[in-house]
Length: 124
Image 1 (cartoon, rainbow, N blue to C red):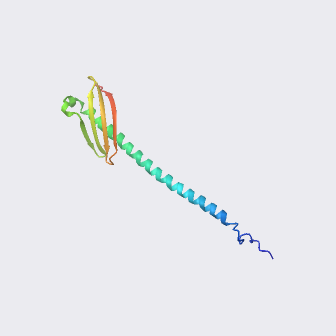
Image 2: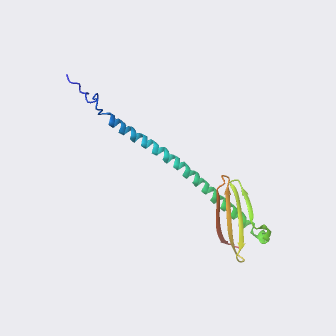
Image 3: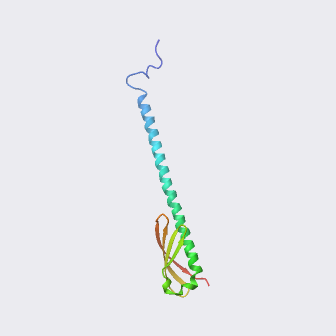
C-alpha cells in the first residue's frame, strides 16, 4: 500500500520552504512590532516633554503678568522663575506703555531647552 504522506518524507524537501517562509514572516512581523513600540515610547516621551514646556510657559507668563507693576525697575531684567518641572528665564522689552516683547528660555528637568518669543498687550 502506498503511503499517503510520502511527499513529506521526500528528500527534496516539500515542506521546508513553506516552514522557512512562514518563520521569516513571523520574525519580520515581530521585529517590526517591537520597533514600532519603541518609536511610540519615544514619541510619547517627547509629547510629555512638550506638555511640560507649554505648562512652564503658561505658569511663567501668568506670574510675569501678575508681577508686572513691579517690573518698572530695569535691574529686574531678565526675570527667573523656578517651578517643579523646570526653570524659565524671561527677558523683556517694553515696546510702549501696554505692549511687551518677551524672549523666553525654558529649561525642563530633563534638560530640554526651548527658546521662544512672545508679544503681549497688558489689559489694565
